[in-house]
Image (cartoon, rainbow, N blue to C red; front, top):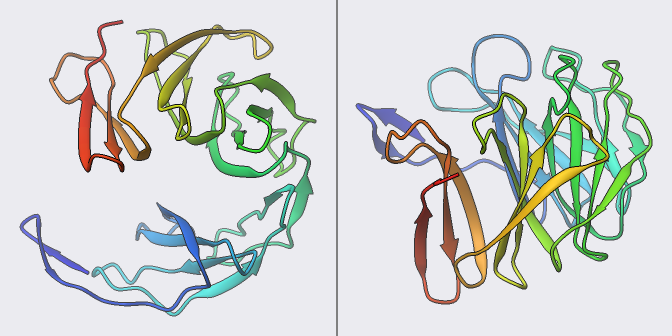
Length: 224
């Protein structure tokens, strides 16, 4: 895909694994070019496609992951990865986020465990390893995760979307990772995708959700 003047003018197709579920865009090898990471659910691996800086990408490099536990594959800074390390999460982990929850400049992990309606928080040590998980009861069948500062403080909060109950659960981060303030809102039926942004320039993060059942997209403005 080539972008010119904010218009998509060409589509390119690249090989990846079977049943790709998620894609992440980031600079994997510190060359100031955006790369892609694709999670291949059926193959239990990820594909890394290094960017050429012109909207095209190199052939995929595959790295093995796990099946049920949360697999962590640490980068070497060159577009290659170390061997995976496995960390326990809950049943049927479906979505994961990396963010700094406690402002120690170290990335932590949040995992949505769809099979038991919980989320797991794994606090990072800064060396690619993590503390044992802390579990919290979540909405029925949590599926999608988002993160942002939703309440005008400086700590990152957690947003959890349930595809089964069509609800959005905000966990407000107080700085104590064993205790979050919870607020639940109804959202579009059968949510399938989400993004957060300040859509009305109000200085607060809003959320947009697509509803698969009625083919809708709904924007929810943050009123605190």
